[in-house]
Length: 109
Image (cartoon, rainbow, N blue to C red; front, top):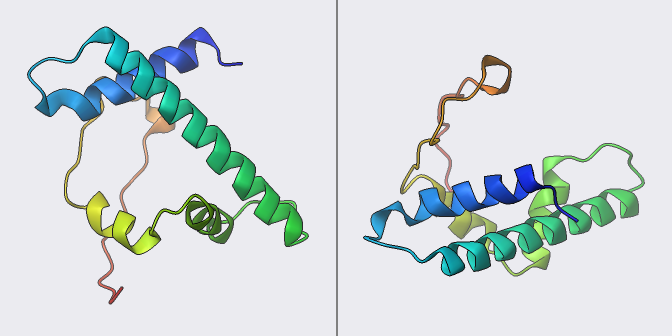
């Protein structure tokens, strides 16, 4: 069950990703937001399972990368595409949620 805040946040994320389109129907935004929600839930559950199997109580990046592989996402491809575009937040984040960016490290993936 998702809260109204979470649902609205998912819709906002989808709307931001769709900014290159001239128009997007509300039903399409709702459907994509639902897909996003289900994907994130599945990714979270798989990451938690990987953590449990490893006998740990704290999730780490390896658990998430393994979960991405479990849902057939090529992590290397995702990392290459992440830098291709950046969609800024629609609203300014409160200071407690802002993160400083780390410098990009050149790697041969």
